[in-house]
Length: 228
Image (cartoon, rainbow, N blue to C red; front, side, top):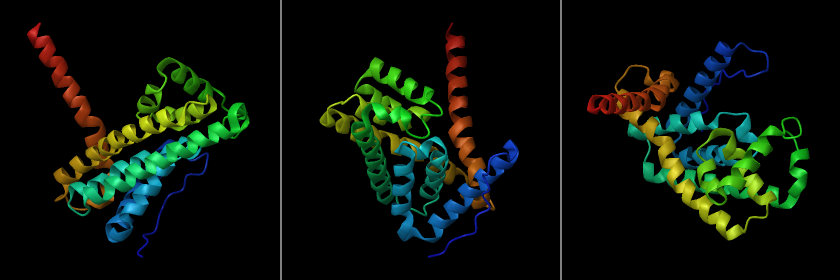
């Protein structure tokens, strides 16, 4: 298996610009790894989706950026979406399920676990969100950063019936994973002929992931203003 060298150095204290550069390099190297070893693409996406959905891990490593970047390979025609999506959905479902069972087993002891004992606001935020939205919190929380890591944990703590949780877990994963790779796929199809595309994957993904929705929002706002 080909394994490109990684230049990621994420030790605390590095300047923000250096960390951003390191993240860009990490994403580029991971994309190159997947592209060079297509047979491992499914398991790698599974691992990324699992880690992104699992409590603890996803709070500290931006696995989302890596999953979005992998979508560029779909857009460029390097990977088959029908191979990648099932692996990613399965990983996301399993990550949330493990988080749920950790919460179910540890119960009220979860706030004493690392890293929540150092930052109890994470659990408190997830608890308020769960109380407000109930079973829908499992679906909605998957689409919002830190909530993705804690809502399944809180659902287990609150002894939410497993059947209801797993239904929301699977349904939201089926929607979340395709939406996550779509911006990368768009960037891959648009920029696939750009020289050194793989080396600048992170930049192109940001263009598709951030700039495009902003443009759509701006056009909608201008249209509304024009009608008024």
